[in-house]
Structures are given as C-alpha cells and as structure tokens.
Figure 1 (cartoon, rainbow, N blue to C red):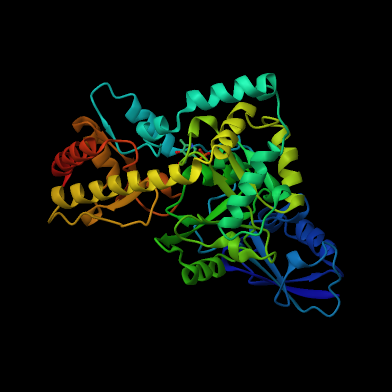
Figure 2 (cartoon, rainbow, N blue to C red; figure 1 turned 90 degrees about the vertical axis):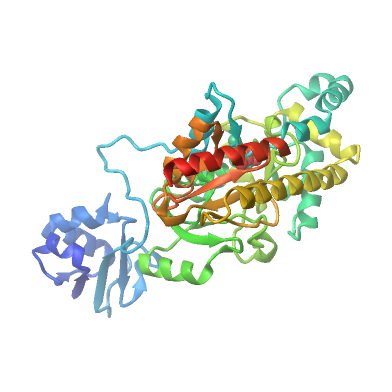
Length: 447
Ligand SMILES: Cc1ncc(COP(=O)(O)O)c(C=O)c1O
C-alpha cells in the first residue's frame, strides 16, 4: 500500500525539493526502511539508528507516532507528516556524532570563582550562600561533638543509600507541613538539592528528551538536565513562576513533547502539593539555605519506585550521603531548634533584603535601573535600562570592588544580558550599603 509523506519545508531539500513523496509501506518499520533506501539524504536527517530521531515529530493521520508501536500497521492511514521537532522553539541543538559530547557546568559558579579570586576588597553580591552569622548561629561544633560522642563510629561510617531513617521521617513531616502527601519511604536523602535534581534527571531523561524550564533559571540544575541528555525549552517566568499561557504557546510552536518540567516551588509554583498522584513529581529540597550548606544534606520526595531508581543511581555516585552530616541535622531537629532558627533567619534575611532595596533606591534613583520585590529567598533580579550589558557592568564592578552574577548565567538561549542577580544574603548591612555605592560608580562608568 502507498502512503503520502508530507515534509515540512526545511526537510524538502533532502527529498529532491518535494513537499510530498509517495512511499509503499505496510507498517512504520517498512516506511522507515523505504525512506532510508530511497531517500538516503532524508533518512540521514530524520532517522537515528533506524528509528525516527528525537529531532523530528512524526504524525500519522494527525496522531503522534510516539504513541504508536515502532512497527504499527499503516493500513487505512493516508498521510504521514514529518516536521522538525524544534522549529520555532529555543531548544539547543543535539551534538553531532563526531564531536565529544558537551559537559555543562555553571556560569554562576565561574562568576563566584572570579569574584573570590579578586585581590582587592570586594563586596560579594554574587554568592547565594547563607551569611557567616547564620552559620555561626547553628553552633555546629557542639552538635558535631554531641553526635560523635554519642554515636561514635556509627556517625562516621557508611550510611544507608536512601538516608538515615530518622532524617527521612523528619523530611516527610516537613513535606506534609508543606502540603505534600508523603511518608518516610517517599524520601531519599541526597547531597544537597543539586544531587536530588541530578538523580531525578538520571532517572527520567533519555537523550534528546525535551525539558521545559523557567527562564531565568538556576543554571546548575539546568546543566544537570542537559548533562543527562535534555534539550531545554525555556519559557519566561516572573515572581509568580512560569507563565503557563506562554509556555503552552512555546511548547506547541516547538512541536516538542516535553518529558520533564523543571520549576522552582519556593515562592512561586505550588507543584508537588497539587500533583495528587496524577503526574510523576519529584520535589527536591535542601537544608543548605536554612542550616549548613557545607554538610551537603538535601532530599528528594518521589514515588517509592522512583526513590528506588534514584537510590540505584546514587549507589554509583556516593553510595550514601555523609552520615555525620545527616546526624547533625537530626540532632538539631531533636533539640527542637529548627523552627526558632528558621524564624530568626527569616527576620535576619528580611532585614538584609530591605537594606539592599533601600540602598538601590537611594543610589540608583532616576537611572532607570529596576529590581523585584520577592517574598523570600536570597536574591533580587536587577534590570538595567536601555539594554545595558550586565557583563560590561560586571567588569567595571570588579574594578570598583563589588561583584554579582550577570544575567546571561540564567538562560541558555533566552537573553538576560541586561539583568543580573544580586544576592544580599552574605554581606552585612553596612557592606550592603558600601557594595551598592560601588555598584553605582561602576554603573556611571558604563551608562
Ligand atoms: C554553590 C551552590 N551549590 C549548590 C546549590 C544548590 O543547593 P544545594 O546546596 O541544596 O545543593 C546552590 C544553591 O543556590 C549553591 O549556591
């Protein structure tokens, strides 16, 4: 039997300029073979290892071929459409076969490295780290001593991959408090939230899958998705999170069938509490910002099946999260200090946020520089007027003794070059004032 194959414009040159070609094939498998044999150039564009590649979308009488068996019969079907999966979307290209596959890191971390290597006195609005005073409030030396004296070698040996049972229970409690249905077996303890993201990426993504991500986004996490084969499709986000209407338009235009949505839950998307078992949701959390980031203790909450898969992946990375670190977190909880500690941190960082906003208002009055007013966290998103480059400002800022992270760190293809991330978490109130004064001097040099 003969089916008509309609080709999207960019593919026609690979089939002698034809918009349609007629192919004799009884099923999808023979259709692919015929394409490879009769139209090798087209085959090279649309097939990978004998199957349709992830870079094309194939519709059979309007139905997405990914929902059909690889050798589905074509009896009664009339039209096969082949179009580039990513037309119109901001999706990064797949690497070519003859290139070493790229490994993505973090421009945020690189910037922090540059700032940290400055020999002159530099006010760091770059680092998203808890303030020194906040780390000192914990009293880590006492906690560590208590744990080691009490638990001895058990605190310093290998642990269970899924995590210390007491810590898993504490996390499950906390997640229920956040409105997420969860019990101990849904929790896996990880080396920070970042490892939780990486494990989820390993378990969910296949090479070429599309991950929809917010933009601006947390680069380290997006790089983890990309390192595990994802092509990212960026959709704009504001203080309320992803713009769902625009996301729908962008996804439809791209022709992509996303496998993963990566969104930030804090202060924007109520994702996991709404999931209700209808979609696989992995919630990644961390003790870094409210406790001690150097302990590297975070978690993922997922179905028991996904926890088992992530545990298997973790066994090839670090086997288990630091026993000592986990027990220090547990000890802090058992002493009942976490709620009060978090309340103190809220007040502490709220004062810094206010100071930063006041300093910016004072120093940048009348310049057209704007910034947001987030409900929490460590950061402001600052926008420069007239398309001024935040990278240019960064270079001038370093010379003035102040650093931040330029906006281009927070997008892959989307342009954030005229914005930057301003972290107020680390510097003292006085240093915030001084840093913003230096920032204004840098601004005057480039504006
Ligand atoms: C340096 C660094 N590493 C990692 C993370 C990710 O969080 P976690 O410490 O929970 O892995 C962040 C978050 O901002 C960070 O600033």
